[in-house]
Length: 351
Image (cartoon, rainbow, N blue to C red; front, side, top):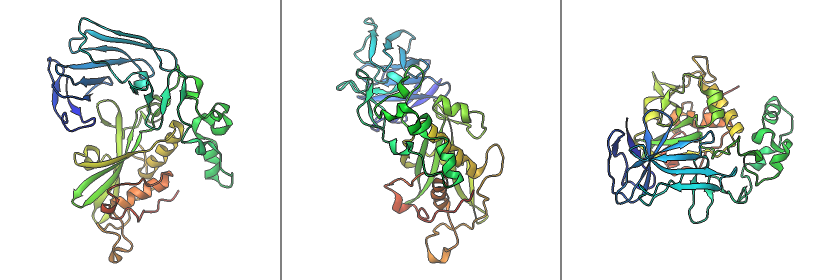
């Protein structure tokens, strides 16, 4: 098995190859994750003066329980209380090289100084079994006035397994519905906005959807469109380009799914059930399993649709912002927005 080191925080280890069948020594100073090309296991490289990669074996929640070195020897053994406090933290003294896996309970990073787990939107204190801050999505738990079919549909699938009608959500610091043995509270990074360079100073935007939770795999795992694999999870991309002077949208355009020249990305922080609803809307735009989508690929194309001469034309960034509008996702604040022609001229996608 071979793969590459994916950049974690600096450029020093970026794209350096590794080989699963041989023992290799690295001398970098930081921690980097190794993405495997097959399988769902996570490999991590712990950079020290004389280090080799490790493999984490996780439970049904994604919590690291056993860590082995490149020879298959057990390096660490971990067990947790229900909310992630360490119960057993055993290291093999015979092969200990002074490092420990930081990705522990539900695969999240443990801050060694505070003892808190970082989930992207907020921190979890495993000792008190509570978040340190209130739920940032609390406002979305409140139902809308049932004045339309869309509002009634939203009220029937409020995030948090029922919104404010689920009494557990009234405690804004609870974790995983107070049932951490069965559920996890993901960090909401399944819908991702990606920006990549076309010709400087112009850029192209696309959408990436990753199936990285059991619920998403159950809902969408049967779809052929999720045919890409990032080393851990299946994913698809949604983007558009020009074909015969028309704006043409499709899944998994080669330029979107590879993104070797990506310059910026943004992850939406959504509750899992809400994210299912948004993903369903995004998939409706092009259609699923060969079915017809909401967008008919019939709009005239122009590279710079903001110019007066191109009044009735659109481009790939127009499709991108129109797709977000249709799914009910706000256009994020992007550093490269000035280089995204058409981003403020979204196409209209009707029900």
